[in-house]
Length: 372
Image (cartoon, rainbow, N blue to C red):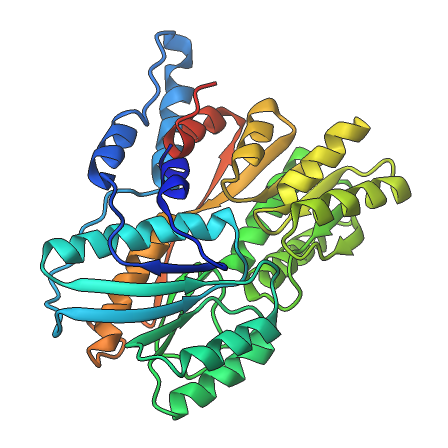
């Protein structure tokens, strides 16, 4: 419900979203959603499992946010954000941004921002967008890094030229990058390892598995894949038979999975490192009647339905809403000339929660208003 309502109310022109104040009763929507996120179960033997599921869902996405007590130095701020690809995952991040924007407006502070991305992930495209952003009058430029090696050096140059640069979302720049701060997932390697560990346990620590990575060079995708590889390497009876890049495309992931199944019809599992590839993999697995176990990332509606049906074993859900909200708060502080320290850390870490079949119905209701 909350994601669908946002999509209906956004204005998109040539993949450009100019954010002022979204006229939406966000508070009422959130209260309604939060009021319905605990599912009651009248059957006593199932109560403990139900409570466990509700707790997992509540921890996965935190809609209850309030601005801290920092007093902004200006009454108007203008930001520029560019991210890897037009995709529902970043729509969810935008929800948190819009709530922070609304709360600032309630305090008499206007926050505007541009939120830009290409239809296909591309470091070259991101470089062009950053060059354009340099021509604008932005207080802060925020980047979800498309390629760590290529983009980090460009950000260093922009910082040297006097631009206030932060990174956000799921992909930080390189460790030595001069960007001021990062808000997002700081544990992508661990997420990949945790999902893979769950898969290995499900398979009794033996079998052939494939990895669908995502976009080449994208730090979050590459780090999750590395976490998966290192975990598989711990078990002598586990073997990686294929590693493919789907470029964060459901259709590519679907086709690649069909190819992998053709070459390895007895495939035991697939590790999916972004939000798109669990869906593509599940479509292919269902079509071919394969028993391969799928683990993957995030909250795509179709993926959650596959999770509910048992086609997907588990999903690591990132708290996109918190990423967006905290990104705006940190951007305001950076715009005022603050550096990481007491007001905000260099890296604001957001959580990932692994959810299973018993959680799927609850989170579908919470995020999409869908009752199964």
